[in-house]
Image (tube, rainbow, N blue to C red):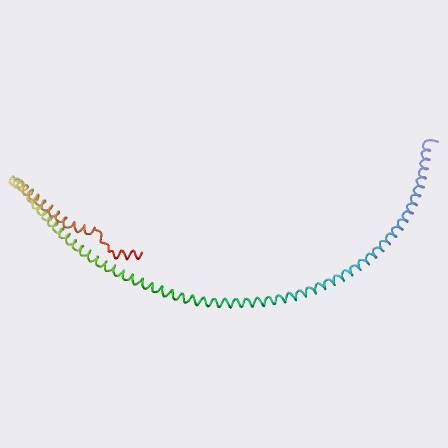
Length: 262
């Protein structure tokens, strides 16, 4: 036999052996599957029984818990009702006592307020009466002081008006004298100008020289007279100006009153 025959023979033997092994494995797998199904069914029955037992126990526990909870809630509600009734009674008594105390306090406050108001009205009336008397006294004193001041002002004004009138009269008199002197000077100057115009001839020049000498002498005389008149006018007006600039005498009574006023 050749190599191929040997190989084919060996392959067939291996196939047969594998088929037998596969049959054995299939039979073993069927048997294990049946055993597993039986075990799973048994386990499911055990689970179902345990679940039913646990449901019964849980239901009994829930019923017992709810019963106990109802009892506790009923007790708590009863205790709450009792406490609420006691608290309502205490609150009612406290409110009645509080309102009574408030009424008493308000009554006492109103009584004290009316009394204080009456006392304050009497005190205010007395103070207002004294204040009005002081105001009347002050106004009367100020009126008297004002009258005295007005009399002093009137007397001072009359005195100053009289002095100013005398000063104006002296000033006008001096001004008239000065204007008259100036007019005379101007008239003489015009006459001299006319004479100078007429002295264009030799005789006129001689007459002009004589006239100039005469005019110079007259001008010196007039200037001397004018200076004397001005000095006299200044001497007459100077005492009046000193009297104006001199400080007015201060009335001791008025000063004392002003100090009192301050």
